Length: 265
Image (cartoon, rainbow, N blue to C red; front, side):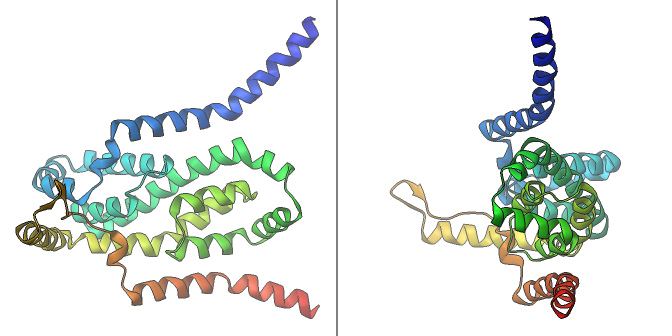
């Protein structure tokens, strides 16, 4: 009886160690959503408090940098919406260069947290039960993980949270994930940070459009028909998207060359 209890206790501890980080992460995410804290990451809220935010940054520069980094890590680790707008806000408050550097570091840390938790909780179990197709996909990711990760990070068609989880479930190594994430998000991050340097003009334009809409449309059936918001995706020009896709395709060149070499051999 004692031997059975001794075997059960380590097994229970292993499971708790395996799933506790995931449970805590989910609980925090539920709390944030339930409290509505993520709603502060809106253009309307930033516009209403931009003078206060600027004053805080001026008087507490180091604290502002650390606070921005902590918020960004939390947003990415909890897979909350608003990361692109937060990057733009960072460029607006800290300057595009400093905001770009801090954002790349913070986003990489946040992504690594969720990657490590997903890999520990689900990755090994999924790989053990993987079918032939999934096993082939996982093998390809393990062999050329860096190239695939760079492609997924560079091309703005893939949700950030999905690219954090998929490699964890496909057996990508932690070091490969960190390098691929860090390098792959640099172009997009600095592009949005640079756009943030002109956020004042964007806010003024949105406010003007919102006020004009209210004058002409008002409300319909008691519901607001005018919205004061910013879709960061709308700031991506066709030329910028083409440039990101081109960079992504360049990242896949080593994979293509490897396949061609295998076929010729």
